[in-house]
Every structure is written in structure tokens, then in C-alpha cells.
Image 1 (cartoon, rainbow, N blue to C red):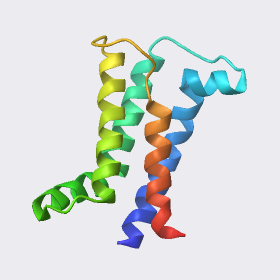
Image 2: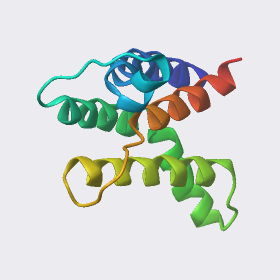
Image 3: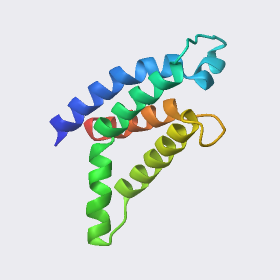
Image 4: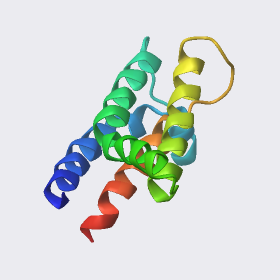
Length: 118
């Protein structure tokens, strides 16, 4: 299990770097501006990979916790990453307005994957 988390953490961390660089709220934090046509679609694609691959243990964990009727940390993390992902995807696709949560989603997954490794 730890080796699986380690592998998922490394892949997710690598994918998080361009997510951070392309996120407008992260850019505003550092006072930089870097964008190109289709950057939001690239962010959606990278975040989808982080959500699906890095978030898989938490999404699997919520199903077990629901089956056991014993909600815990996996439920909390799975709900948080799913809400952030769905809202951000809906924003990119034009269904809602607002600021996407791509970098928050990716860093939350990274931190939660790192936690059992330290």
C-alpha cells in the first residue's frame, strides 16, 4: 500500500507543477501572468489525470466506508476533491461561473498521498 501511495504521489506531484504554473489564482499570488489559448482545457486535462490517478485511493476508500456505514477520512477527502473537480470542470465547460479550484485540488491530493509516507 505504501509503495502504491508513493508512486501515485510522485506522478501526481509531477502533474501538479504545470497545474500550479497555469492556475490564474496561483499566478496572482506571485504577481505573474502566463496564459495561452486553451490553457483552461490543459488545466482540466491535467487535473483530470491527478483526480483519477492520485485520487483513486480516496475514491475507492469512500465506497468501502459507505458500505461499512462508518464514514471517516477517506469520505472527507473524496468529497472535497470531487466537489473541487466537478465545480472546476463545470466552470471550464461554461456551465457555471467562478474561479476554478484546479491547484487546490491537485495540492490536496498530493498532501494526502504524502501523509502516510512521512
